[in-house]
Length: 497
Image (cartoon, rainbow, N blue to C red; front, top):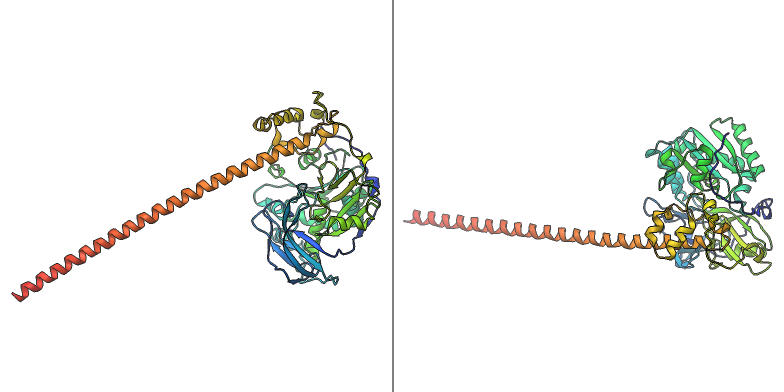
């Protein structure tokens, strides 16, 4: 199959050999699970259990709030010991709403949803099942998957792209998943295609995963499904970027600020497909995921099946701890991952890796002034001018940075990786995006306050008018009654005379 070349991108050292040949293994049950209610884009889930409740594995703990949200389920059986705020798995280290449960070690399932037959189930029923099982994009974006599966109602879709590129260095969890659970992954892909109503499926895998390529190619041939094609894509970062992957596979370019659905294509991560298989075929909610633990500061690397809510320090301890003090501890890959502020934070639905990088694995060099070499421009996959955007942000010209494409930036880190002056370009962009978001929220809050104030004034005017009309009506009725009584009295006087 023909693939199309895209501009930009880099070739960082993969370091996947540290864990690629390590089979998936389960992690022992921790003594406590802390389950954040914000594991997805959108509003946090709302708890429906209370402290002291005894719950079963898979039981619903918190319901989705709003259209772009996802419910949260119990990873095992046990008792709820706290509902409050706890350090979140985020670089800020700020606390977030969290349910804490203590496992009873019996791991007893509660009532599971009945299995659905994808051959006879309606697409809407499949999407509803995915939503009720709390499945989100497991490549790290954590967008609720059911929302994407329902895009058929608003877009003319024709293709499903499965993002199995796994272009981030070190990470091998998707590779192992495809190699070890091939049939289940392939089944999940076909279920998503049925839910979307598309006629074509493209599974994109980077060329540095030959075993996964062979496994899924074999699965496609075994089913004889001609609508599914497994495509080998170049090993190039950020090949896993949604819009760039679509362009590589189809040659179609997604317009700025638009969705791939606007050109008829929906992209899902391959690990999401496996979760969809478990939800539809087995009635199991998303309560665990595969996580890569890697980096030369780790005693033992590998790929592990981890319960959602497992503290990061428990996973690190299971791997033997550190060889040396990590120079950098990350949740996710080295390019787009988040620094771990506390290992007390938990593994969540979007956690695909825990990296403990040694000093030798971390780029060194003092930050120097930009020399306008434009290496960042060449590396940018979005065709932006990172050095110019950073300069405008330094001068507090956020509007100017937006005009030259700040909001189209992926924060993939390619520009910073090639910068000879070690300018922390991505940090500038993330800072600016955060500031713009805060300003937009403040503006939205002001507009909402103004709208509510105007609504209140209108309501008060309406009440005042209604009160005046009622008073006038009452006065008119009294006047009419008085006139009637006077007239009646006059009539009686005439009769008496």
